Length: 207
Image 1 (cartoon, one colour):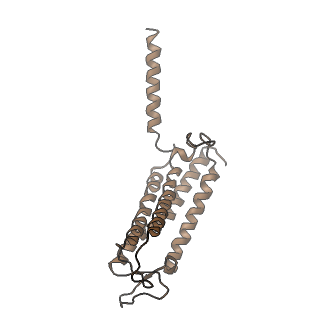
Image 2 (tube, rainbow, N blue to C red):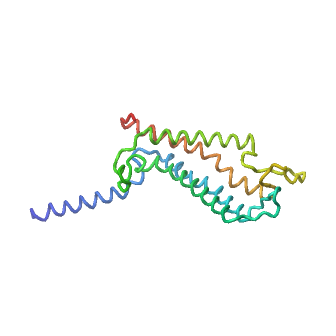
């Protein structure tokens, strides 16, 4: 009995450890609302990516006043696809503010694997990103031309000579439905960043 009992205990301990590791999906101390907010970010970014792909394929009801017969080229599809991938990539980085890999670099990353992530290395870029997104959102309302989109009024105006895209009718509704969720992006990132900073500093970390 003295030889089998320690073995059984060791097996149970190993199994328990594996279960605990498997259950660690979020950084300890992360509030539930921060988890929800972090997961919401990719979903508020996704509709705009879908709209750009539809626009490139000519399925979003968008006109080109300067070139009425314009057809998207392979380079246009590549640009839009890369832009969408980069946007979603930045959105997914928000999960690092609630996941364990946002506090400790994954071991599979060369040179840095296993090291503690400095608080400033996460908070400063996230805060700067949230502020930049806020400025872009504000400018979006102050000057729609920033996005090279002309919203035609109900009087039937067909766009201005300087407009690159013409959005009217049902395409305006589709555009708004796909882009309005982006307004939540800076607020969500800012809130999750605050929760991350508060959690890390509460643990006694200073940098």
